[in-house]
Length: 287
Image (cartoon, rainbow, N blue to C red; front, side, top):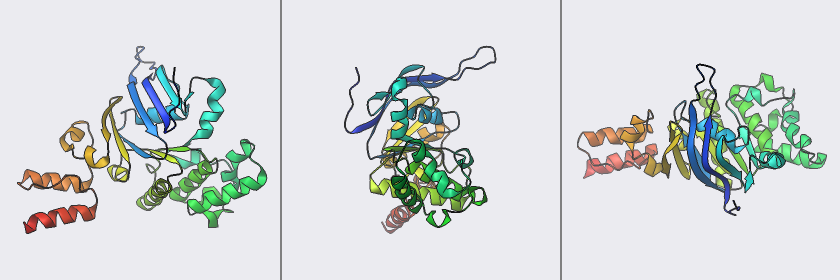
């Protein structure tokens, strides 16, 4: 019988899932026995190429999908328990790729207020939450604007504010920058960094962008429905050859250091930032 760990917000136990195919009755396995735990207040990035199972896994955290085998627990609540569904979705908020799929109102502040209103939050508290959420994502000055007139990055920030206004304990970002231009992508990544710094909310980021994972406390790499690697980004990205074999790459800094090592250098592969990479190369040239 599962008991809640006070430091743990998400747990999966031998999680299996498959999408049923109409072609010759095939049932391709998407998640093949996933076991993981996510501690409260941490920033966990889940990296994988298309088809690795990372988005399917993310949808289990909010009970959008339910296990075909195994269990998923959110703060000890079993996602298969229908009576706990609302509490689970209050605990874990989801931000998806396309912000248009999450925006439901014709005015920004009304959209952000939508979920708290449906949860029965008192009007004065809704006002506070909406203002605070919009300030957090840098969209307070746009509170009376029409969402459909905003840029993609601005829409995504409004979608994030809508989730923040629910005050979940965990937010799962499912490839939130996939449809954005570089400027929009950077603005969303900065919001994730800000949330991480506060430590008030657990952040799970699903992505295929290497550089978005550098600041994570923990990086989980998925391939073919399994967890391939799990550890701090600095340790995971040292495995250049294994990652490339899985169809993934490494941050440009690590890639450069790796190629230099192939030419006879002996450089550390855990220098992830541009500054760290430059210092490592500079120090090697001085030796």
